[in-house]
Image (cartoon, rainbow, N blue to C red; front, side, top):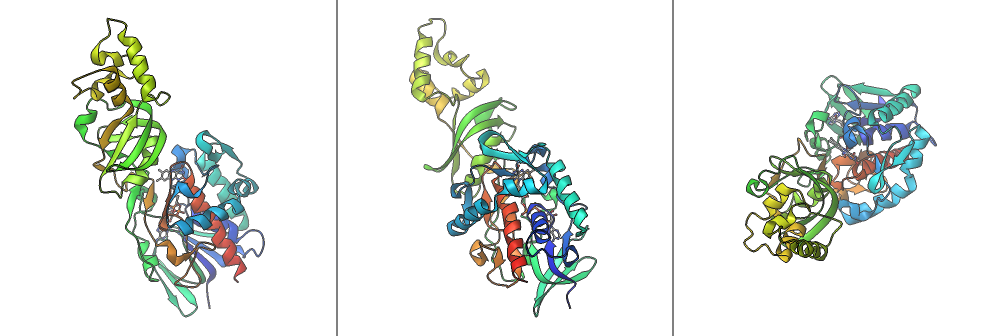
Length: 398
Ligand SMILES: Cc1cc2nc3c(=O)[nH]c(=O)nc-3n(C[C@H](O)[C@H](O)[C@H](O)COP(=O)(O)OP(=O)(O)OC[C@H]3O[C@@H](n4cnc5c(N)ncnc54)[C@H](O)[C@@H]3O)c2cc1C
């Protein structure tokens, strides 16, 4: 005798959309047949903080090369993402999207919390069972059923959905202490690294630059091997570098042996353009040497670039402006990272349904899995999609 047909562990992006879909559309389950257990005192705590509170929920340019992990798994997910059509899905739910820079999709209100309000209103109107303040501490299979234990109670269900997230941002309830729930079913965990995170650099190279924000092109390298490039904001800080462009390349760097970046200032200009400009300026006899950079880029940055320069020709200065190489010595870690790189190995999960290949009736979603996306809505797009497609499979299999 089961208490519920489905128990969902975690009321974040993937768990909430799983619940929404389970009680909607074809073969909808009765809301009383599903239980969502959330450790925090409310659901969607992280969701409201996403996109600086604006909720960058998806992206117009979801494609294989925006994700890191097993290629076959990612390729199937991208096909399913296109079939699910999150824009229409959220619109039907009452949350129209708008599109910002670089294809980023937001709720039209540009308020993640108002989008969560709509989800909550939908779930309340259906009378869904959501128990907050209930951290699941153990889950196992007993015959055909799952036995799920929280600090307070034991529940039994026919199917179990693990949507407990990763270990980035422990202030939102995701501290990496729930992976054992997947390991209980013999799932293998790949090593976890912080991703979409601020990067540390040697401080002598950026001395005096703290607080300066520049639009740059930043390229990530492991030794000399090029990894990825991003265009956007870079912020110099007391520990190194931050900003949207830095976040974008960080996912390529945190698990590498010799991580370093090339920063190109004046992104609209090539090295030749800059050299030409500097040569023109040389004709003004009153501007010489490294002063040639004054008025072209921030003065403090110019000084930092020229620190060890002995021969400030136009060519050498242009090279520095377009090729500022700096080592990455670390990152700010999981407390500051937005995403976890690594997690439950995806070749043990069927990408068409998110069902475990090791345990029938068990589903693992979202950031708990070893797949992470670039900055720009790609991680929520995966979490939401995995919640929806797993729910469709669950409904079709009762
Ligand atoms: C500050 C910040 C900003 C971000 N901004 C963006 C953005 O704009 N766009 C984007 O695409 N991505 C963004 N991300 C990443 C994105 O939020 C996550 O990748 C996504 O939320 C993962 O969804 P999930 O459902 O897998 O896990 P989560 O949303 O993390 O939800 C997991 C839930 O499970 C609960 N839980 C954990 N263990 C248990 C347990 N044992 N029992 C019960 N409950 C449990 C947690 O409390 C949590 O509520 C951001 C992340 C952070 C930290």
